[in-house]
Length: 191
Image 1 (cartoon, rainbow, N blue to C red):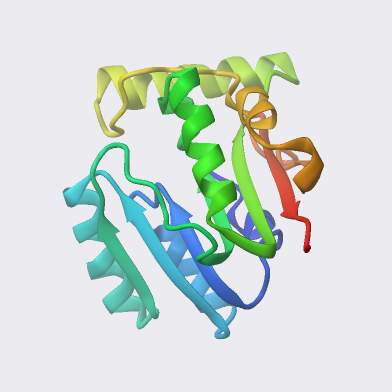
Image 2 (image 1 turned 180 degrees about the horizontal axis):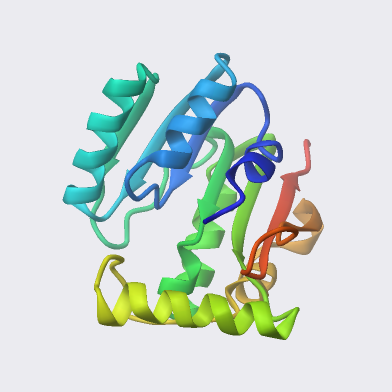
């Protein structure tokens, strides 16, 4: 239900890639299969989803490393060429969004790319459809872990990035989808 092909095209074709909040690893696997020069590491809070992802990666023969992390985990500074956060910020409280985005930004090497995919407020009808779907996933069926429910996470992510250190652009990803997908792409300035 997410525009993975369009999102994958926003990620550099080579380097060390972190999929922060990888869930069952589907996007991590796509990143690895789409470009052999990528080294993909996915992390998530759910042992069940990570186990599913490892099994799927084995079946797909994808070179992906998936790990379970504790709440509050932060990637090491200057460790990655790209960090992807796909549909994870909406599950966080605003302070946690700020902390997580800042940690992801610090984990980038100079010239590294941060790609954050979330839902946005426009068009309004797509935002409502996405909100309903996530309400069902998080609170009714409990397919997704989360204590908060933030329907405008890209706004919080934008404000967490130091403006002077990142060139940014927003890419709409909702064409052909009933959800208001968009990505914030931020490239860390080289010194």
